[in-house]
Length: 314
Image 1 (spheres, rainbow, N blue to C red):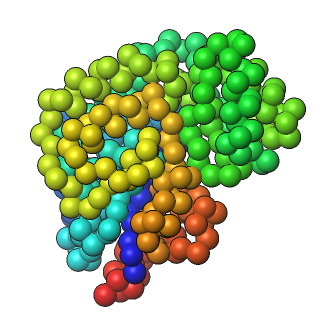
Image 2 (image 1 turned 90 degrees about the vertical axis):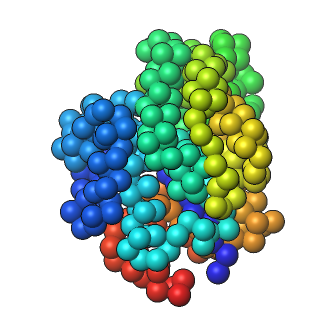
């Protein structure tokens, strides 16, 4: 088995997330407590009990999703003997790239929590509410159709492909009027289109102020050599050089999440035969089955999943 650990991004949050892990594993409790201390915030209480509108705020959702992913990673290692070093590669969707780095030891858990808190705040500051928008193009949508739709939408302002998730699911981002015009074009070309309930136009040039903030923040944290090779969002290729890791995380704020290409590379040149999703939900597992149907994709959410997975690896 050639293994890749993958880590979910924003949208995977829900009230109650992490509660079962907290109750079942002291290792998970330690992770949640360490993140609370690093942030000076009762984040786990918000994850467990809500309210939902506060949990879905970008500055809370980003570290919360990472917290569950890292709780899973630590439980796998300490309670089931499956360390991140057993994976040939790691990768994460948008903020999940930070989770992947934390699991692989590139950044400490505390630094990762603080970076994601800042990332969420900086993204919200970068574009006033109502200026930007994001939309999902689904059904017959592919990258070529999305690019054509964005080209038409630019008559009204900035709009780009933000997430190339898989064939039939492309996300565009930019100025609200431009996104809406691109949606009309996409529908005329045969795709379905729907506005997303997000607070900012992520992964678009409108996020440049946030990228500048992250450049300064990332320059100030300790960076270690990861125990597994990370495949980066913006290149869909492995990255090893410490300076390049920082540069790509900065570029990721405004750049495209090339998830479809990343999974294709991992299952092709990377030789990955099993994708294991660590964290809340099963979104990446579903995508993986569509992008790389010959590989196995599993979601590791709870004790039964961990035990089965560890036995399969032994």
